[in-house]
Image (cartoon, rainbow, N blue to C red; front, side, top):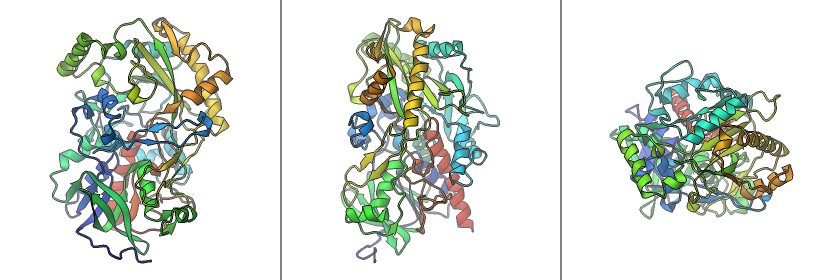
Length: 542
């Protein structure tokens, strides 16, 4: 099949990177350190010029805006009473790393050892630790686990809220050990989180990596430019069809095409280009370039459940945001000291615990925030003074998939998260609920609560709580795994991130993760891009 018929390349580069998100900004920056390499970086969204991108708490104002968000949602979820779950993904320079909650957690060291066990050779913790360290500038200092001098500035929260401090103290009274650094030796315990924030401003990979280097002559950035299709010559990727300013054009890649669209857009671009499960592609009338059954499979995400509390204590964001005087004070504190609520992201305190003593590493994560919401960004904060904590299963067993909705991949794909379709996920969630009830009943957290708003008193038994999950659970926004790397027949990418069976094509983003990390995926995505850049450079030298 001749895929180049009628294709006229108007521009040529050594490398074309599709997606200027958390991974794309990193890999583009690192590869163009070699002045002999020309690279074009494509981003479907625009620049991150809105001031709310850079104010940490601003993610709540940015996410609901359709221009900055792909606006994805799952298909009706069978284990969630047929509810569709909203999946915001960043459509802007920096990608989802420009709209996320800024909590900077790598995951457990054992997560990456498990990656290697699952076939990602060379991705054990000892292999990836140097790239975690290379990426960061850890404000408190460097040690054998932490780095300094990297593009990502990582800082501590300066003035934790009353609920966050109470959450940590309560957990220690329940014999949960204090953890001063969740990105250090282990994740076990309770403590305050770190944020990718510098002097009160978000540090996305667009800010930390890309923007300081946009003056490089060998780096071309195209925003508001969507990658539509990969162009193949036989089974070699040689370019990308793009839509720029309403017109379709073609860009040649002399060496490689790199997909960095994330766990939804990267598999969609592969599928729309004819790389994926042949039977599914034929059903959608897509010409098959390469039968690769794993594309879009192995989808994983963290499902969370919230516990919301009304309170009489002053200072929760719920009432501060509605009071003009208090809002002015909050703005003044941010302007003068780069601290306060505006300098904090989605959560302040976290806890990693085991669902049962026999577990080798924690399998439940809790997070405490100084505000409360039903979960939908458009719904906003509750009108009463309140705060909340949530919890989720660190490494869920349920697996989903992504499929095309239309032949060209122009419409939002069909996302089947398949949340809570594995019995073990239910067991862990119920264990989390029992731990949550202990926290609620223990001082000093107990004294902050005027009323437990969600779940209400009607939720008393395990069956009640299961129904509460079905009706109320939402996502932590960590989709991953849909272009899994490995060495088996169902792996989409090899351990050096090449698409199996295709030349000149790699995937570099969270979709290559064999298993979702125990916590947030942003730091691990950056690490993947750092390591990928080295792997690509080594390949080119050979």
